[in-house]
Length: 398
Image (cartoon, rainbow, N blue to C red; front, side):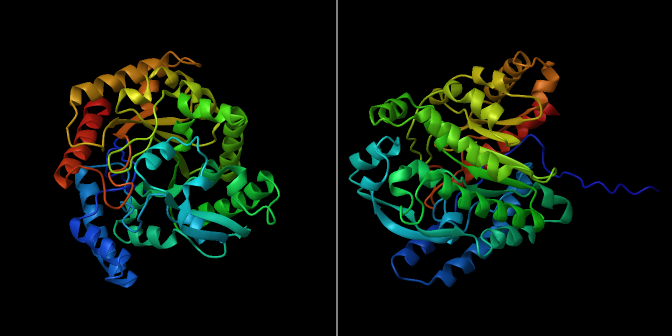
């Protein structure tokens, strides 16, 4: 009997999720204890190791097509790479005055009385001198069978995030880097090295999380940038160029995706605006394979910008919200997917409806816990929403 040597996909190929999962109460309490000096980091890591198999079991039993570690080892989704690079200094309480005032979340934080937020500042030449996400990936890899390794996904903060937050004024020490070009050149090199190392370890899907692309959809932010004399068109072009330099000449079997949303902190969002402003440049010019796009409410606009999706790229429609426990109608989700396929089919270039449908998948709009405290949703509601994604995918794609 002939043996099929091709790996079997155990989850549905069109049923995704963004990355983070609700931490169990015991882990949330342990993190609070650590931050108040009541336990050690070793105590936290020990519990993280105990929780990880539960996360993997949840995703496999749901039938998802991707598996992450739920970002179980992070306080905030963006943690990891910037803090670990040589030349970067972590600042736990950086004044909001050193963040760009046009950022959509700054007015909200200010209104809440928040005057400081964690960040980093580039104080020396950037270099990657040690592995960064290797431990996260290898620990996850140990939890799955060989045929499931290709379904594993590592989420990484996007390379332009700090610059978006701080602009050229406060991102780097100007005695170290005199301009953005030199700063990004070293940062790109570091990101490329990390991507290559993850690939060498067996990772075949790397997702960059970057709310910035959705922030550029906000007319409020665009107007504020213009008022400050910031060329937002050039800034967006620069950021796309940085990404393209990071992803250039990647291995053919490595999937690189970008997730963008309008904010997801404990159920809050920061921005509104449809993708029309950025869609053509984002979908056509950004050199990635897959886009995870927020589409759970009207604040993300309509599906029409999907007409710019070129052949060979994929969009994961974030149609199920993680911001509340209310369960979506499966028929409504299916209806929006079919409408999206119609838009893509009539785009440029035109393609058949079935070909367009094959370029789409579905997921929640963002993670369930972009910060470790999580969104206002229960673990049972999280499970139901992941199940809805899988069931809808089965009914749409078979």
